[in-house]
Image (cartoon, rainbow, N blue to C red; front, side, top):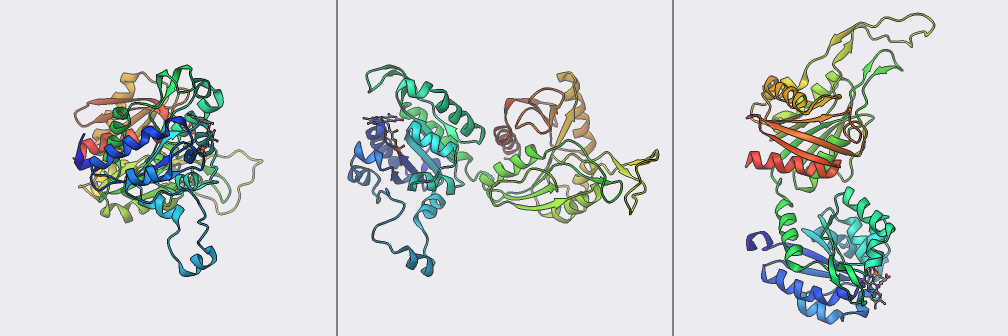
Length: 412
Ligand SMILES: Cc1cc2nc3c(=O)[nH]c(=O)nc-3n(C[C@H](O)[C@H](O)[C@H](O)COP(=O)(O)O)c2cc1C
């Protein structure tokens, strides 16, 4: 275990009302030995299992249980502009650990419920959230619990799953809190990732361009912008100074990410040129039109006659990015339709060469669950030496995180 990773880190631990509560006291001792500072939030139900004072003794800090403190006058609070607890605990966390996590708290988080200090803090945090469920086997296997876990995984909440064994309720099955080694290993990994893009400036483009035929009609494509937006979100969560250039109709990013919207190919290119000088990494995931319209009409074209449109090949923006800033680490995307894996990689490599890029992420949008408008993707990442890394089908935020892992390995 690497003390450097744990040292000077703040872990906020949410303890919920499960029989495994008492085990967390030992976990806190271990994390403190490794140098982390620990703040505990207990749900009201957790206080039936372990005394608040035990967690105070273990963590060395006040334990928080209530969203509203009986002695605080919140009207005064607001006037004085003091930090409020649900936000302050959410803000100081390098990692949010929920351990043990009840079926109830998993359900609440999955559904955006924030009715106590713990769930409110989880909703207010941008730190990674690691959930360690522990419960009776029938509860764990319940389809509602499983759906909630699935939903949270897609949203990039992290889990250390419970283990098989004797359960406190007398049953045998999956439901025991995972062993500490598994939990601390995962904490180490997440703390390493946290802020690993700090001091890096990243520009991400996402979504489709529009070329106007007339004031109401456009040529565009099916890109939703979800993949690029997910990359911007994950980069932001990992501490990067992030700017998202987003197609005006594409998916809105979560969090408070800086963004500018683009419409046409030339609008996008101008916005890139304006910003690219100041960035370290450029990820060009936008689906840029291959053609522009020769003569855009200024009034709506009548629809009863035949219409011929003349299209001109558009600027290949991706090929120009390194020319605008030769120092950037450049990542592009190649979407192909129903090609063999070899064909996909060959074309991705061709694109990489033509743009002098550092990585190209390729996917086959002809396959179910990949590419345009899906929430999932499967990609192949090709580097300058034609090495290939495969990221299997997963939610776009998980794929985005893995793409960032590959970028980081290369720029270190
Ligand atoms: C003795 C006892 C043990 C319990 N153990 C668990 C448990 O291990 N896991 C779980 O999900 N719920 C368990 N529960 C049920 C939760 O306490 C209950 O769902 C509660 O609403 C959880 O509240 P919280 O999530 O706000 O802490 C237990 C209940 C009792 C009475």
